[in-house]
Length: 388
Image (cartoon, rainbow, N blue to C red):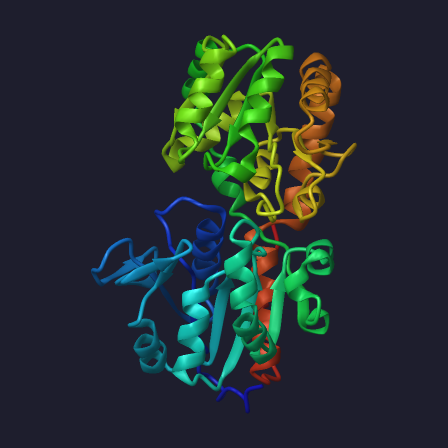
């Protein structure tokens, strides 16, 4: 706990993530949006890993971003020895660490940082179970050191093996998006997408990795009269392409690769429904659901043991189905494609839900309250930020 912040001085907040925009990923998008939103009230610096052994410093949308040389990767985790020095030199009032990030955990412990420490616990380590078990004593040490652990929902906190002993430290702050980014569209591009792929467009967005479950969505399309567009890249591209080819779906299922951020809203708008077919707890939240919902699209998601079903609610803003259930997934897609009134009703409710609960303004308000509570400030300077 801090002894307090001198009146008139802005807090120094150090955000530590694994990577940063323009690197694609839900955590990376969240860290960037959060850091930019905090600038009005704090001096914010971000340190992350670079993809090679070079040092890069830049100012990105007002945020000071340092990308540190990565000397080795351990189970997919970048190790950056220079992080210890960066932490010490910045002398932050608050370190905000985004987990999982084993290299950063080690760097913070080695730095001797004695100020406030906040962790956002984005996800358990699911696939690298052996590494996670071996590293758990170190994780426990950093979690005991934290002043607060930010989680996206109580559902996730209570079902997390890693947080079982730290429930009293958890604070629920749902992730938020810059919803106005998805209210802007190019009508001509939306119409062009519909003319090329419509009618009855099903959209999926995400990295082509094991826990996204895109293979089940592709298989479901065998039973659906419609076209599937998948935006994203990843190591499963060849396997998914083979699945499409082997099932004779090449005319109705399209892997589009990456789409520029400025054009993504056009695809959400052109689609009839959005599907997040995730199959593992590694999909901890699914920010892409919020992006589709902000565009007024109903969502089909899966009943996995994470925050995913808490974002789009079954029977309110879309349909939730069991993971890996191709028949249930196909049935849900057909229900929404065949019922215009239901699709519109869910889509309108989805847009309202984002505006009411999942804006970056609301998330920043909650986070600033936490920061200034830890810093012992009598006046909470959140009044300048208003929820949409």
